[in-house]
Amino acid sequence: MKHTFNLLQRYVARALALHAQGTLGYVGIAKETTFGTAVAATDYFEIMSENLSETIDRFPTRNAFGGFYEPDDYAGARRVAGDLVMFGHPVSIGHLLKAAFNTISGSAVLSGFLHTSKFISTKSEFAAGVAGQPFTLEVHRDVTSSHQYAGAICNRLQLSLAPNQDLRVTAGWIAQAGSLIAKTSPTFPGSPTDPFTFETASLSIAGAATARWESFNMTVNNNLDGILALNASQNIARVRRRGPQEVRISGVLDFTDVAEYLDFKNQTERQIQLNLTRANSFSLLIDAPRFVYTTFPTGIPGRDRLTVGVDGICRYSVGSGLAVSLQLTTTKSNY
Picture 1 (cartoon, rainbow, N blue to C red):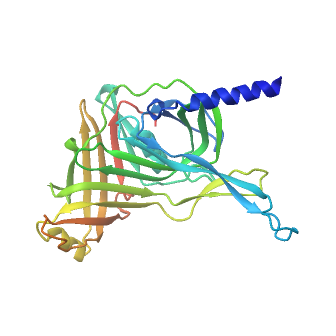
Picture 2: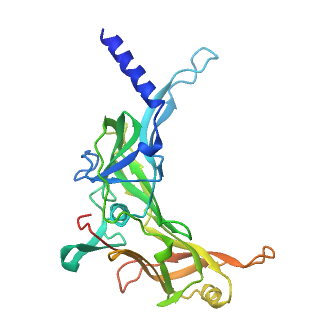
Picture 3: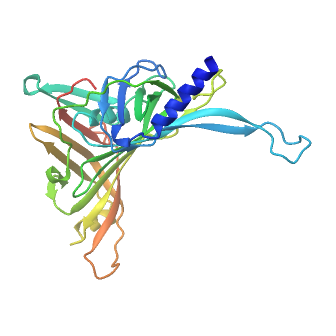
């Protein structure tokens, strides 16, 4: 009887899965106090896409076994990783900035209605063997249950902006374990309703506004690895750094004069800032005090208008104690 009931459950789940729709999906998030101890979602995201998944390492256990057939292998370590892609909503983006930088300072403004949180280059680790703030992620894919990923730490964050686009945010995660839970009921941020978008963006170099940048990308690489151990588990035991936090900026420039080419040639450091606003004083300011070009590929590819795809490093500033800061003003204060 129990076997029949289990089979019926599987058939029902498969029938429902055939009608799963991406538009019905969502992501929930909550900070953990202990790495890998799952907690219920406290905030929710509307997203563009995600590809978080669990994979299983495999290994053989025999080479000489008296036959030509392939012998059974063994299921080894379980690893969880993937990307979450979303638009830069003034409230939701703060969770991902916290995940990427771990270091935050904040102050209330406008009589408590709005709050400014400043996310800066990582100053410390969350705990011994835990490189950053761990989160629990709930990913609902419209397949009856939600996938829950515990011990999720942000390994890589990318912020991208171009004409006719929102501020697109991609967060790459490493997580300790995955499981299935009953789906929860999401409540998405309602104020504001719109994300940061290209038409309110302004960029400056060395304090002077410029309209030559046609796209902007900032990548924060935390250089994390999930470490396995002999601890009676197939899941990773800790997340450690294999190198320092690296911050890179790239973009496309209108090539109209040689001013910034000379900055590249002379390796001149400049402050670069990108400011985005939204109605009712919501804002995001990205500030890198020591930006230097690393590539500036010139050339004439054809008869078209000339542009240059550039790359640069955000160097650590001893004076400000950071390589980059992101100042977010929104209605939420407790990231």
